[in-house]
Image (cartoon, rainbow, N blue to C red; front, side, top):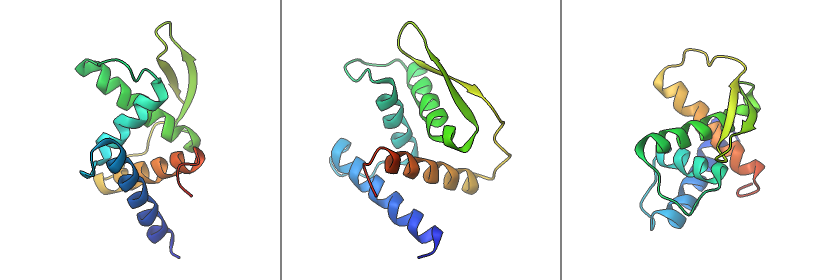
Length: 118
């Protein structure tokens, strides 16, 4: 199976799983899935977040899923339990479609690593 086809199938599996679990079957988009990963990584599921905190959750998720690619490295947890990352390498300039493929690939790998999908 071609790499693109496998990624597409795995991405659809992630979307279906998360959409059924968190959105009553309504299809979640890429940003919503990034947000959910940020929530998972922070681990503070019991609270409400302000707008800027929601953006920070998305930043945490992006750092976490791109960490295996060598772009970020976990640094420390602050006193409120928020993870902080160090930039190791700047992301290359990518077109919107290329950026989307990179994020989907990284998210799929995250869920494979967590043994949520195969």
